[in-house]
Length: 334
Ligand SMILES: NC(=O)C1=CN([C@@H]2O[C@H](COP(=O)(O)OP(=O)(O)OC[C@H]3O[C@@H](n4cnc5c(N)ncnc54)[C@H](OP(=O)(O)O)[C@@H]3O)[C@@H](O)[C@H]2O)C=CC1
Ligand SMILES: CC(C)(CO)C(=O)C(=O)O
Image (cartoon, rainbow, N blue to C red):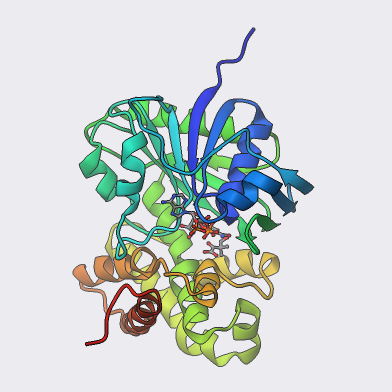
């Protein structure tokens, strides 16, 4: 029987997106179009070089179709759009602005494989009748230099619906099930269902809000923070506890020992590891600090949780982001 493939648009061919595109194509259940930006010319001429803990060494891989600009839904109908760009709402165009032209209202399933909290909200406003799925990834994958992807940690991806009250629960669950099936087809990734998306997102923030920010601010990788000791005790641990309390106050109970659990999950696979926000600062790129730190801070504070460590980290990140914007000519000094 002929297989009906899903037509997928994947936007953002960096660390996470390139492994995602490779895995999707290998699974054989999807036709994938990849939208590239700064690495378009390099990949068009030489393909991607991939060194992957799941897929091995692959030289000169070219996705079957790459494009430079977001296609228009009038010309092509996409079943899924998988977004693996960084999500930086404080520097337009926003993710919803970027993806909108390719979304067919009421049809396209939007899959946000990005860190952070509340990233679905602008999509619910713009596309109230489209299913929006959450992808929480534990992959450790980086593009350096352009077109060269080093993927170290197993591709563990949890997919589940951001619950949209406008849509039938079954339709949202079915979209998630289908996405998991397509992503699992290559037999390489560990792609599972995240029935409780707020839980999976807050749980991951215990790591990202605290370690990504402390690494980005200090310029130190996770191993160096551990060897130094003080930054873990004075910043990371208290910040993790504040995230736990904020999650609890927002109706997402995390176990008392969640900080130890997350550190023990991450440490063996991420010894001297630069989390994505540190990678961005080192490259002079903007950081995703609003969704990773600002949103949980605002949500916890609104519920009356005292979050002094997170507030200080957030203030420092605001300053660093401003400096990064100045270097890009996005803000001016009077
Ligand atoms: N890296 C990791 O191991 C993990 C990352 N994550 C999350 O996954 C998401 C992706 O991260 P990561 O892969 O590291 O990010 P990268 O910076 O490696 O890749 C993002 C890619 O998106 C491209 N992009 C940005 N805007 C556009 C646009 N308008 N059109 C086309 N392409 C665009 C960038 O192009 P350009 O080079 O031009 O900027 C870049 O190639 C983030 O939310 C991150 O927090 C989650 C778990 C692990
Ligand atoms: C730590 C990691 C790689 C999760 O796997 C991540 O989410 C990040 O670097 O932002």
